[in-house]
Image 1 (tube, rainbow over the protein chains, first blue to last red):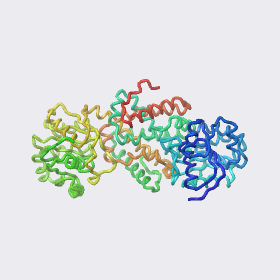
Image 2: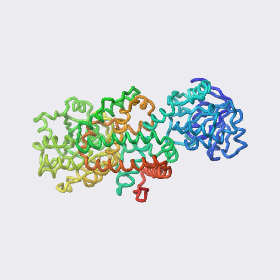
Image 3: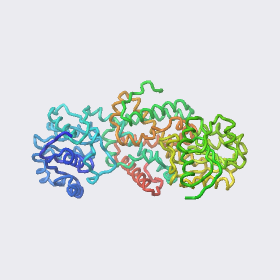
Image 4: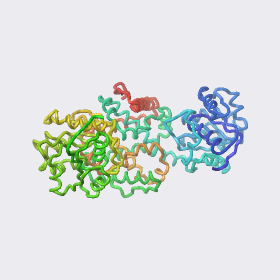
Length: 307
Length: 307
């Protein structure tokens, strides 16, 4: 694993994502720098300290403690629901050293860039937008593990204002956790994630919502089996987090919902007309792609698929 | 486990479902009767015999062997894609003893009842429609296991023509495998399964199909993670089987697709108008219901949910 050294890192949000970064840097990368956790809830940051995930715990509303925490920090990680990015960066801005590098772990990036420009002004050059793709249903400091990022994708969306050195430092930090680091434009990130993550969450929530509205909902749930279980696992995700993501990535998500609705309408038509050949061909394409994906193969677009 | 005895059972389709019944009856219930496997493919039935899943293997096209196999059978199980139910029952009909009880394992029941009436005529009284809800992605005789049905739901949809004794015998057979046996009308079965099984499969296939059509499909798949993996696990299911189910259960499935499309349109509207409160409330209802379901609790319909 890549060596990685720092004097002090300040993590806003010491749950699964922030806490796992802290544990990875210490337990996997052997970093010995100070780790400060900051949170909205005293209970959560205190719990993280008890668990040894962080060295010291700071309450977000404590001005003096926050100023001391940020003084001389090499890194700041913002690991909170995306809607909190702007208020958090505004809170951090007055205490930020010129040499501190700030990054985030938000699931959307266009809105985070907008928030960072608004909150940091010219100092946005210190901010490198990032997204470790490593979500789970579990949350809180107890869910933090040192291996969360091993072989996971981390996407960085560098700004024109970022120096190459600043971006490299953030990339090195994630590499030290065992992650694979990619770079792409914020718009591209948001479109890709809308398709393979945000849309499936919306679709999964929608299935449970639909069944709940049926008069025989209890009967239906009682016969739900393995397929339902896997399909709806992500419907147990945090409502607050997913509310924020849906709104933050609205444009890309609406476009994906529309594309999906069109495919579903096409399937509906094939079912309505008992067009078994069209259904079987589409299901076969899906099965092949899903199987190739599962085994790590490259997948080609179905340019020649039946429309 | 309930004791269960028979002299001979003939299983059409010795894959996961049929093969697991054979193994359950022998290895769990201690039954010592003869198990005959019948298949379209000599290779598959021979493999089942080699594995000891069945005692003897019969090729479906072999008239003489089929006649001998069915002579004196207590039970016949049809465990094949639902579209094959009618041709299989027509094939069986000429050789069927008056005392043989026939049942099936099809995922849809209305169409199976229609097929059975057409194929068996008055002898439909010998046919008890059934559905063990125990599908997996794995298939073939090698996938058959004795414990597949333990604590799984089996639904029987008895016909008015069935005698109570005939229905009881089929129920006893499934109870002997460790399953929980329910009875309901075929229409109700098809509506429930359309909602919690058939629709999720269609939705999962549709997501993979949609991503495949994107010009940057390969990039999108390369950033798909755990949520996508679980959501699309069922998109690796058998295209032939799911083509048949979609067409066999067309009416109920179309109704579920329409209800789902309405919920998705409502979510789309909330995203479009940045109505965070509506999104969070719906996601919270889904999470609660999904969590209660996972822990085996009873779920109430959301009569008072926001429309």
